[in-house]
Length: 139
Image 1: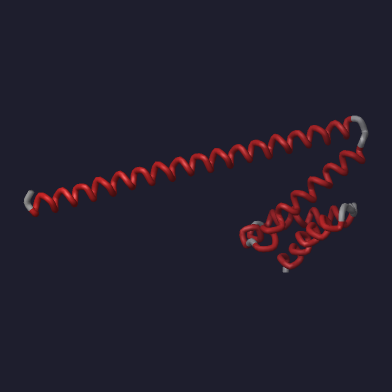
Image 2: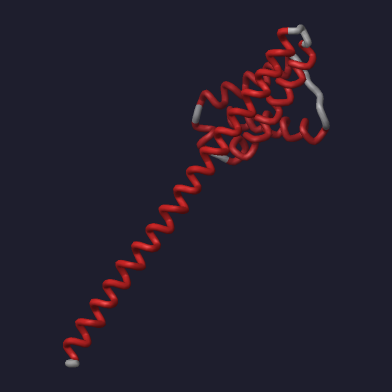
């Protein structure tokens, strides 16, 4: 085998290896991305179905005039939603850039001033941090 043939064979093998390796890596990342998207969609579906389940229970309470149970359930959900927002409210410019986000939290502050609600101290502390962050953002 001549030196030229060996060089061409080596370069061809390298090119085929790079193309094959690239194809394998692309296929792996494509599969990983599809799994991530599917998992995200599944979580979104489960979250919505869970929320619907809670809403039906709250509506049942209201239909039979068990307003205390309905209010407690709604207050609990409100606190949970506020706690989930805490990292975004305190540290995110994206959250702060949307005027509607601030307006909704102001509604919560106004509501809580009119209808105070007490749960356990840890939850109250987290909720207060979120609502207090709003005061700093409005300035």
